[in-house]
Length: 177
Image (tube, rainbow, N blue to C red; front, side, top):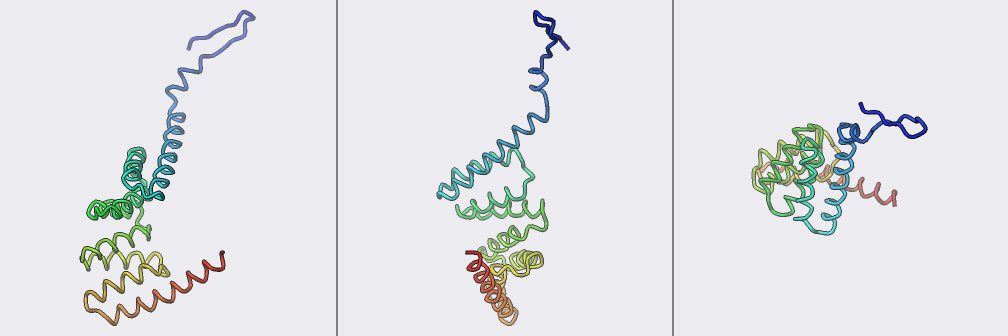
């Protein structure tokens, strides 16, 4: 390492080159860039700029390709854009990376239901409910799927559960306000 002395004999080190190659500095920059991209993508999504949100989420995915929530967010935007097959791929990635991601299981089941893929929808929705038994929307969607298959008795149970949990969610929300 090269040393530097000033006119009084004070010893200096050249830290510039060490920082340029420091993996911790690089990791911090990636982390900050990742969060900035996610924040920007959410803003675009909230503003209804779905193409811009999708592009920004995809740039964030390049930084962290194994981030389950990011795959979930990309899937949601793709769903809104009507790109159901690609949305399914991202929801599958999300649950593949985090098997306990109830929201991703729910959305995967919902997209399958929209496509009339009843068995796949039922499996995903049952998985969502095994992880989040009080999630009203999963009960509702599963009731819809079961009704479509002519399984009204089972559907009625989930319809009842939907009303029960939706009412509880509404009461909780009103108390929080």
